[in-house]
Amino acid sequence: MLLHFFTGVNSVYEKLVLYDEQYDENWYIDSGCSHHMTGRKENLRDFRNLDNVVVKFGSNNKCKVKRYGKVMNGKFRVNRVVYVKGLKHNLISVSQLVIGTGNQVVFDEEGRIISNKETKEILL
Image 1 (cartoon, rainbow, N blue to C red):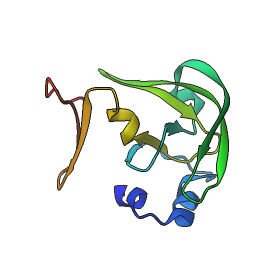
Image 2: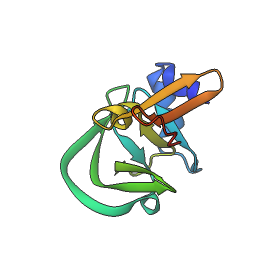
Image 3: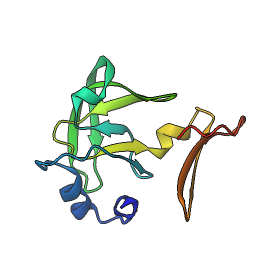
Image 4: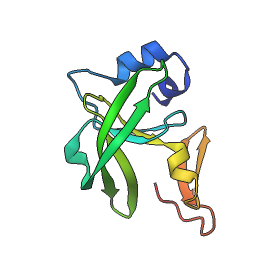
């Protein structure tokens, strides 16, 4: 299922991800995603308002983002998750996970591992 996010077929991607009546509760790691995103406000904690922030999807469609927060799952916390109204899937941005955080994401034949580079502690 992660392969859908790496195909580069943008129009199909957006049809799968945006504006569907059924909502997928899973979180997907997306190497092409610029921001962590969710379509459900209830997933977020510690809301903050945003001004003039726009996310752009693969086919250059744009969407205004007005709020962000954090998501916590046990010891793993994801900060600056933007709320995108109508988004069907929860998306985790690889670049946001690793740049300036000391974390790394490794994909192998068994799946993915998110860990701290220095301590090697597996976070997710």
